[in-house]
Amino acid sequence: MNLASLDQIGVAECRKAKNLSQKELAEIFHTSHTTIGKYERDEMIPSIEAAKKLAGILDTTVGYLLGETEESDLFKDKKMLQRLQDIMKLPEKERSSILLTLDHFIKASKISLM
Image (tube, rainbow, N blue to C red):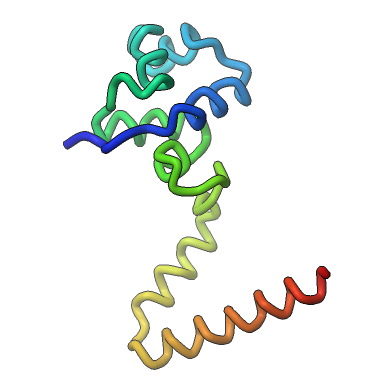
C-alpha cells in the first residue's frame, strides 16, 4: 500500500533541519540520493512502511510529511497520545464532556493571550 503523496517541502525541510544532505539521508534510509530527491519533488511515493521509517529518521510524523499538519512534532508526545487514546475509549457522554471542557480551557487560554 502506498501513500497518496508526500509533502515536497516537509521532507526537504526536515532533512535540512537535521543538517543532512540527500546523500546522507539516503545512506541512513538505505536507498539512493536520487530516491530522496524524487520523494522531495513528489515524483515518487514511498510505501507506508517506508514513510514511517523516513519520519522516524527525520524526527517527525508521517502526517507532517503528508502535509496534514504544519507542526512537525505534533503527536510525538507519548503522554498526550495516551491521554487522547484514553479519552477515545470512554463512553460517548463522558468523552463529549471532557472534550467540551478541554475546548473551553483552550478558548480561555487564547483569550487571555490577547
